[in-house]
Image (cartoon, rainbow, N blue to C red; front, side, top):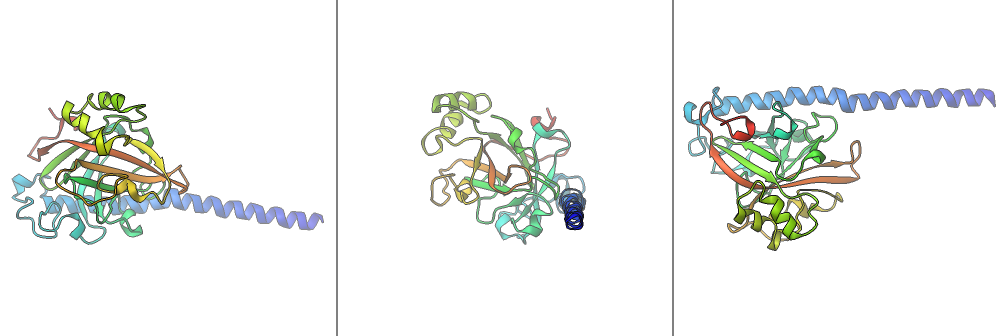
Length: 274
């Protein structure tokens, strides 16, 4: 009996060590791999956008970049090879060093590089929903802190020739009037009203849904139908929830506040510009 108990104890210890090694691999080693892949993708954006990171200065823009280039109007993100970087995402609430290259596609290989654009959703700035997925634990964990975002926090994207500034929709607003008033803290009054009423009424800036609730990346989340010019330009970020689990999905919805041209030596106020 004692021998059997000893064997069982040794087996449990061995299992614990194996599990600890697996967790270390998932969290630490995959972070290293992802950091290398993300760095390469970011450098590739520099190359394609010009070493100065300024399309106007380098002569590269959406009109002459070619059909496969980031920001190209000929094909857009949906026409890029999976894993190809085409934009950058900045979230000022997460610190001045938060910056990730966004890649085409949401397959495993793409998401090991960085946040990935859901194929079939809109491009940055287009009416509808520019939807992006990212890991929460391991593989760079770009979306680890999404649950910390609050009403009006900025999500800033850079494309080949534009800055796009989105604002997180109201979080935990008890009614449409409260939602509108909170949104008006960072959005023009007309946009705040539109983003919190009609087909967008009740759309929360941060929420938790089931994995099968794919409606969160619809052109109008929760309302089936194709994208059309009359829709608001949204962006949606999704990740697993809670940490170390894929039981649910954490979702962030934001609406486009404004765009700015990318010019040398200038960044939006949200990133420290003037």
